[in-house]
Amino acid sequence: MCRFIFVTGGVVSSLGKGIAASALAALLQDRGFRVRIRKFDPYLNVDPGTMSPYQHGEVFVTEDGGETDLDLGHYERFTNTNARKSDSLTSGKIYREVIEKERRGDYLGATVQVIPHVTDMIKHFMQDDLSDGQGKPDFVIIEIGGTVGDIESLPFIEAIRQLRNELGKERTLFLHLTLVPYIASAGEIKTKPSQHSVKELQSFGIQPDILLCRTSVTIPPEALDKLALFCNVPKARVIPAMDVESIYEVPINYHKEGLDVQVLDFFGIPVSETSLNLGLWKGLTQIQNNATKEITIGIIGKYTLYKDAYKSLIEALEHAGISKEMRVMIKWIDSEDIETTTEEAFSTLMESLDGIIVPGGFGKRGSEGKIKAIGWAHEAKIPYLGICFGMQMAVVEAARRLLKLESANSTELEDSPYPVIDILREWVKGTSKEERSTKDDLGGTMRLGAYPCVLKPNSMVAGLYGSASQISERHRHRFEVNIDYREDFEKHGMVFSGMSPDQRLPEIIEFPDHPFFIGVQFHPELKSRPHTPHPLFLGLVEAAWIHHKNQNPAS
Ligand code: GLN
Image 1: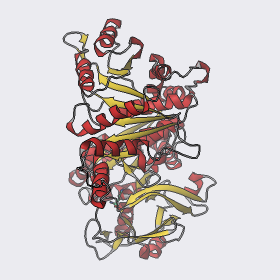
Image 2: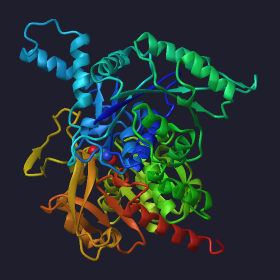
Image 3: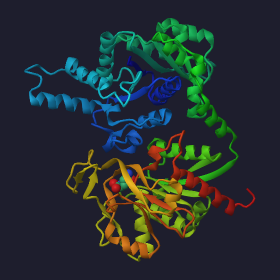
Image 4: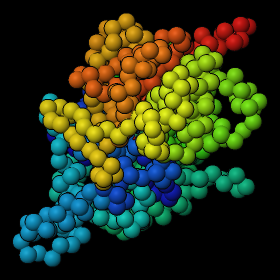
């Protein structure tokens, strides 16, 4: 039987509904159930692809090319399962479907309304495309973005209310995540905000079945009694969700507080304690706590004040660090600062780093700072990983410094007589050909999702990826390395060590005269999982550790 668990949030945003949904999924999966997680976002963009990282954080790209909410990254990392485009829905996409249907005349003369037409469409998408090779999952966890009471999320709340009526209590569970704040001056925690949030939910016809209470201190039993009484939830189903150091402790904590058992009990599924093995999560947190080696990786970008913009990257470094029993410290560097700082401050900064990453990015602002840092990394032999824009800027840097094409640039940034990075005009997707020009819409038109890449035998990346001669990685870009310059670059030591199978698109470049200098056109961070750290990040942290030891022989 396929059951639905709806996760809503109250009181404030950013309580970590995505992590909560992911951790619950991990626990259910650990008990042998098959789980799918989906996110419904109330905003009107069709997808987050055109939104600034400041608005929305990272855009997570799925194998099938969906530009989705960053929570899908957590889902993949906690369940080690690939998400799909259909797992991320927005009001924009739902309204677009409804309006297209209306234009086709499919509503047969009806007045098209939020209830029932929009809510029907929401319910359709919630239940659509759930099967994988083994049929429908045992549980579908659906996270409703935003906070209960937001005008935009009302149709979603109404749709899940209707689904409870249609599918019954045996197949639906409402889990509400709230905040139980601690007021230091009063020395007390407060249950009132949670009470209000549940009242709000009740006013829409929804009674939460489980209350998950985010808290920074232990909630005393009297407060749990109060929450149970006022929120009309059995006490065993008022579950404290205590702040933790590492997100990998969350499944362990939820289990300790009884969340998975209460979910199974709610659905009348017998709980066999023996089937739960929290080994992975316990192992990860243990290594995190015990690591003695430490390296510092500089991430040079333009959204460095807003860490959500680099969520998967941070996680990928963490996974690689855990696997190598290292603590990976991140130094966030604003690329515009590099452009204005003194030479002395710049070299001091660079010398403090054991490795450098220039991650994905868009636009001219800060690009010269990135190029300057990449040049330093190349010459000072600091391990460097350039991701997408970071690869493109490494190619521009090499064109200027090695090929002496001083005005070389990417045409994304300016018109250049040496367009070493140029717009992708056509490429092969599966068996069909995709074509683009500068006149296309910006939304959904990049080269998106998983593409194969053939590795050059005996290259550094071939060594890192192990026995594979062809790999598959996820892309999100509109520009590419201009293949016309390949020979010139090769004469100056650049190796094109990864190419699309038709040999037309450069996917990876490297410099063998450097201990670790790799640029990749794709986003390896999207495929790194705690279960399987990504080989490129493993390679980077290892090279960074060697660099660190060379610089600090005493460590
Ligand atoms: N702006 C570049 C492009 O569109 C790089 C994109 C990225 O880093 N994801 O090609």
